[in-house]
Length: 146
Image (cartoon, rainbow, N blue to C red; front, side, top):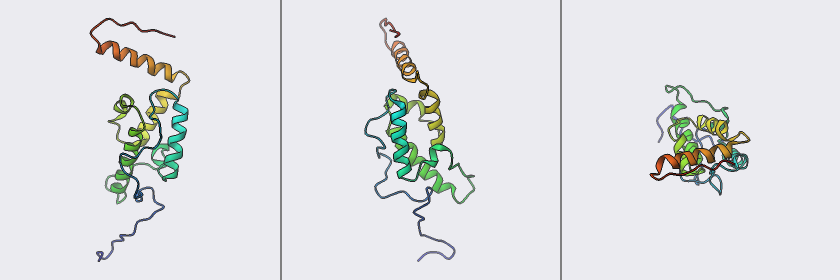
């Protein structure tokens, strides 16, 4: 029996409270992880998936972080963490690691948009990867610019 004053019912329309029984941190929002190419298609697929799960507000900024003293904070934190895990699972390891320490899903989303939504985002990513591989290797390598 519930304590007086506590409501154990879950509001299924609330993006804070409701996480479906099939939702888990390893859930894949998209079939093909984002690897630096085709950002706009990947982004559209993620938006569709998050919208279907009533979690789009966590990335588009319409659901903001409540104060840590708010009664909504624990539910927000849980749902935000779930959305972050879904986004990270939808990217290549290198890209996911570059945003791993951002703590709010909308911060990750904004960073990805700033980085890849530009028309030359794929080329920029390719150049960054080539630079990274040069600094990691011990032999001389050359960068090919297109």
